[in-house]
Image 1 (cartoon, rainbow, N blue to C red):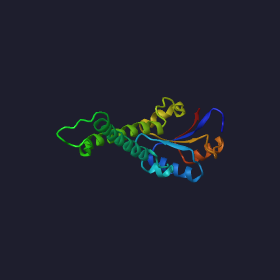
Image 2 (cartoon, rainbow, N blue to C red; image 1 turned 90 degrees about the vertical axis):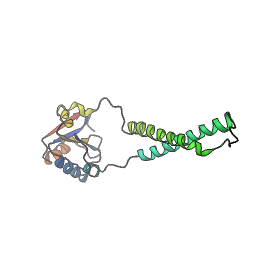
Image 3 (cartoon, rainbow, N blue to C red; image 1 turned 135 degrees about the vertical axis):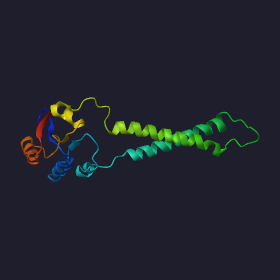
Image 4 (cartoon, rainbow, N blue to C red; image 1 turned 60 degrees about the vertical axis):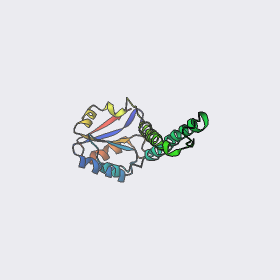
Length: 177
């Protein structure tokens, strides 16, 4: 890995060119790469060989914990801590617990989804090395970028620059760390 270099970035003007370039980079053996687009591109998931996220499992666990916590709180307050017999009804009347249990399940799942998404994405991240590339500001408008990171085992600045140049991008830029 070169000192002070985060990677190399190629700029493309068309989404098709970016997807083709990402596929060719994966076929060439590069594994640490990322793409930046102004809108979501479904084909990039497959082209970059992105793995599946753990977020759905985290949300399920958060929902189960939220539901159990809501049910447990109701059980504790009505049966153990402050039992009041009203009209001869049983203290543990579980059908009355269902609405609050449902709402606590949704609350637990929702909070886990937000916090899990932020944590798994490494957010908040106010600075990233790709912001050092002046033309990267166009990534939010009409340009598409493919970055091969210097931590990639196959990364060699000259060879990678030549590889990206053969993909016929508009420009290849060095991303300083």
